[in-house]
Length: 423
Image (cartoon, rainbow, N blue to C red; front, side, top):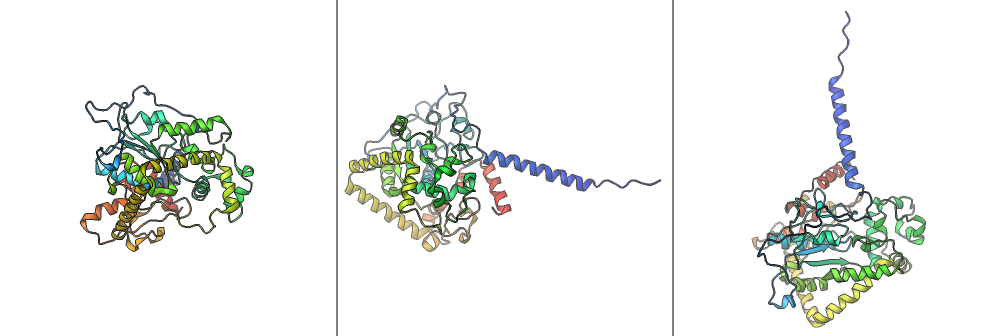
């Protein structure tokens, strides 16, 4: 009697396991990189009638009349609408440090390092959210939805955001996110940005995947329709709405002056607003926008231009009210303190390429396919007085979120896959 050969059970089981892992990977990849359906539709949580309920007798933040001049209490309830490519990661580090120092309650995303961007923010996206829960600080990337955000915060919370020259922002966004926007894949020249700006209507489709990164990104992040006609009266209505809702709109180009005004608004100490520039991009081999290309980028982002011009004007009115001479003194004080910390904390005194970063805990998140974001090496001999502050000031966003207790399992898995595939 002839015996039948045994089935290769071990090989079959191995194949099934690999298949299951691959399927799980595809599903996870889909959930991470594909934006939710209807990103232009705002949703509200089902318990919209149950706003944040502060504990009885808990002190409520009030707007100080003259913050850093004395006689005020530091504000601890802060909404930071984190816009893209505006030095917002540097400001995020400032908020992380303040919240950690004072043991404040952060509203973190659940699983990722953003609130399911580019869909609108909803309270249900917050890690460990319960109806009626109050938070001190919310500061991760989102598409802004005022009512949903306000429902997490106590009365009197400070609302802040930061904006940037729209042409420069467009350039930075194009270089950072371009590989994630399929409509750019048809661009064939070495300088894809210049090719795109020669005839943007030829390539751009507002309904294509991730197209929001390439036009009026500030308007989009703030929750508005980025494809509005620039002449529509709704544009000015939206700008005035931002002015009513936000206590301070910072300017990336005048970051130190912005931090002085922020310190005044929040009644914080100088140490609270010290910073090192984080998530900065290495200089591109392609020249910066200039001349005709700068004008074309400006014309392509007219909604953001109107927004920027409005808040550029209001910013300098705030500076005048603060006092020009006083502003100059406090900016000089801030820069001197930053320089002092740079000498204490940073090995070599400057940012380095990703390949030169020695500690993985200091490695910033990189755009897909290229390591263009700079980071730092922490000095090995720092006195105990400054060691903790130095490390916190230099810690990139993802690592700091983990240190603060944010659940980033999707982001971490995505990073592991990228590292394995060398993306």
